[in-house]
Image 1: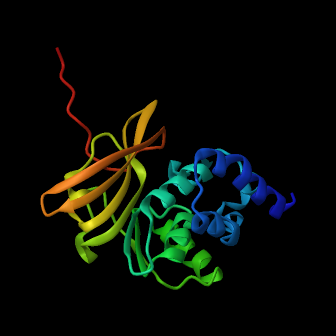
Image 2 (image 1 turned 180 degrees about the vertical axis):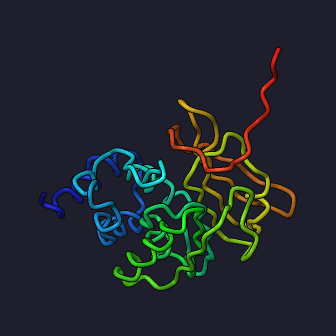
Length: 217
């Protein structure tokens, strides 16, 4: 595979047509080597418009979803970021390339261990990787300027919104398969948040995330 041609094609055929036009994001997608974060057995799919399987039944989001999330969050160089769901570490690397610092938490210790090695190889040092269950939030370093949630939530936990600083932004995918909605939520004051619908997609739910009660008649 011609890696650079495949990367170029990914950007021009998948990312740009999905309304990702932010030059910072497009440059990052060129610079951060996605192929190094993909499992060896799936390397041929590194630039494909698919969710790439990881261990434990988890997945890397398709490149266009990662790119739209990154563009929507508009991460600044002084921002402190929380990523819930480290996974492969690729989105972690993208966030860290824009932010002051990223705290990334995953329930699987082998994911955080693997990501640590990959991030170090990529020369990315402004990331703290932690292992734990963040389905109900991760208050340890709150409040945050940016929160990125890489698994879906059947309903939006209020704890995620409350961890934001005023002016902070949250990317989260809400709903049940087959139709889920990617949202950008911004904290506008102590007790108010705005909500913008970005696109529809489908990703696996966060482990241990609360589910709405279903009525039985």
